[in-house]
Amino acid sequence: MIWLRSCIFNVLFMSITGFSSVIAMALLPLHPRFTRRFIRLWARGLLWLLRIICGIRLEVTGLQNITPGPAIIASKHQSAFDTFVWLALLEQPNYVLKRELLDLPFWGRVARHSGAVAVDREGGAHALRGMVRDAKRVLDEGRPLVIFPEGTRSAPGERVPYQPGVAALVMGSGVPCYPVATNSGRHWGRRAFHKKPGVISISILPALPAGLTRKPFMEALEAQIEAETARLMGGP
Image (cartoon, rainbow, N blue to C red; front, side, top):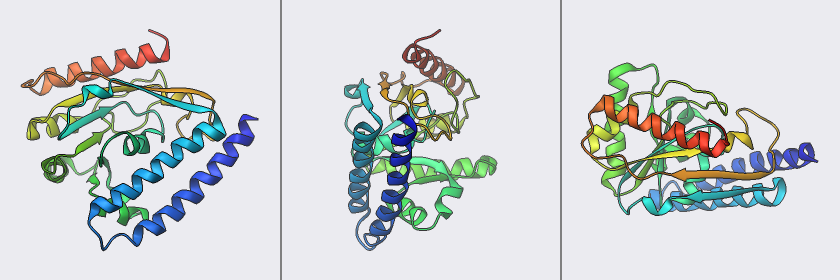
């Protein structure tokens, strides 16, 4: 039954995403906020499909910790689920994503138009400065920015090094940064076909103290995210 439900969802996911990308292309002449509103409908539709077809519900705690205005959401990344859920949870957010995704047909142009912040992971300091510059445009508009500090998906229980890009964003902008933990990989695994029923939990922690220098900031961010993720996963 899980296989059948997963198959139905995956087919619908790909079909709806492709169709939505074509529709979103028609919105490109308009202000990006209209594109972002349409993308939010797409993301909410996927959450509904996950619940109805796969029996996966979403539980979010700590959303009240995020104050209105610009913010950096530093989230644990275990699943493709993480790449769209914030579009449904927040008001007109953007993601920091790898540059290659902007080269995708249709979707890449829509993401670029909506304000996605691209980073070349092999570009070194020059790419980091470009990311901070582009991110500032999002934050200056008073909108939240989602970044995955690990830079890639990790399997549940796996620890991968946290990348310095998130520190560069926080130090360069001065906006609050919220650590986020999740157990999404338990139900929608990395590159996994099967979608396992249950509850995907997202825990938004209070903002890290302002004024931290790079090293203490990175240590506090990783410690809080990993500790809360372990709690959500139900193990040490």
